[in-house]
Image (cartoon, rainbow, N blue to C red; front, side):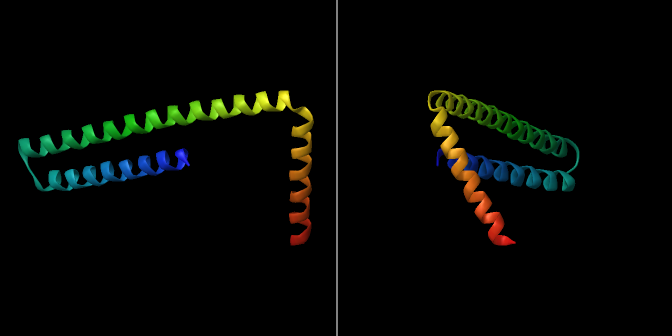
Length: 102
């Protein structure tokens, strides 16, 4: 659930930044001189903020993935027969699904 909330928030933030950049670039196209330069700089700053936000989200996702992999590895080592049973059950269900579609 928390991953979905974070992803949704990130997507919403990215849309807001992209909408702001699009608006700034449209204004810059109509403007001239110093005003156009200021609008381009603001657009560049907004893009840099979006890039930083995406980078931090990527780092957070990578950390969460590593933590999940470590937890899974620890559980499998602590419960090898349980892991074999789960893998067998999943394989059996997948086999049923594949055979029923033919």
